[in-house]
Image (cartoon, rainbow, N blue to C red; front, side, top):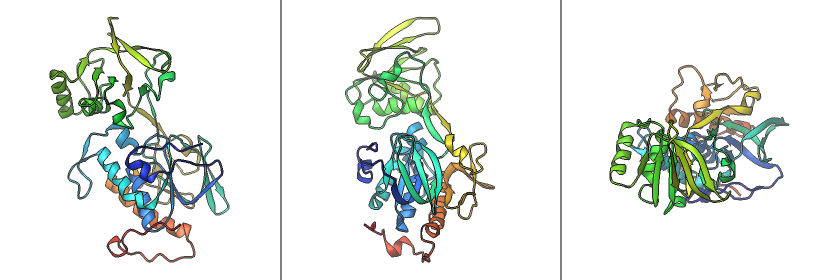
Length: 357
C-alpha cells in the first residue's frame, strides 16, 4: 500500500510509502485544504509531528478542486493570489516539518485506544495519534460523474474530474465539459499548452465569474478554444484504455464526434461528512460544535477547525480557519505532552524549529 505522491513541491513534503502496520504520530489531521495544511505549520512550530489524510488525490481541498485559478483577496500580506498559489506557498511553509500525507483515502473509523486515537482509512491505513484535528471543510469530496457507459475504465487515465498536473495535458487534445468556474478556469489555464480544447456546455450562458467567462470567449474568438454549445456528453469512444473521441448531442438529438485524448468533466463535487457523523462529535447540518477558545470537540483530544467547526458568530473565512489552527495546535500540545508546560515564543524569536528525529 502506498501513499499517492504528488509532483513538484508536494513531493518535497510527502513520503511515498506507508506500511500496513499502525503508524504513530502526535497529531492526525483530517483534511489537506488550506486550514489543514496551516495546522501542520502551527503544530510543527510546537514540534508536534503530523500525518494528514484527505479523500482527494491531491493537496488543496476545495480550493484546488473547485477554483484553482480563482484569485483570493483576503489572505493577509497577499493582496491577490490564486488558490493554487496559496496551496503551493503553504506546502513550502510546512516542508521543514516533513508531514506524512495519506491521499486519495477517507478516514472511515475513529476509535479510542488507551490514551490515543486510532484512525483507519478506506485503504486500510492505520494511524495512532494522541490528538486529532478535523479540518474536513464541508466533508469528503467525490466527483459528480456524467452517466456515460464504460466511463469507469477510463477514469484516472483519460477521464479526469480534477487537474493534479497541468503538464500532463501539454500537447493533448482535450474535451472539457461543464459550465462553471472549474471548467472555464481550466479551459483558460490550458489554452496555451494543449493541442486542442473543445468546451462542451448545454447552455449558451456559462455560470463562471463574468470576467473569466469574457476571457473564455476572447480565447474562442482567437481560435485557441472551440466552444461546442449547446451540446452535452453522449458517449465515449476508445479501446478501453485510450480515449479516441467524445460524442456529444444537442437536446434535439443532433450528434457530433470530437477526437480527443482526454475528457475533463467538471460537473461539481459532491460532499458529505460520511463516517464523521458517527463519531459522537455532535455533527449537525454539516458542522461540528467546538469551544471557540481551543476548537475542542466533545471528544477528548479531538479538535475541529475550518468550515466544519461551528460556534456562535463564526465567520467562514480562510483566515478564521488559520487562527483556529493555531488555537487547536496549542491545545493539542497539552494533550500530546500533558506533563510539559508550553512556554510560547513568537516565531521571530525561535525561528522555524527543525523536526526532531
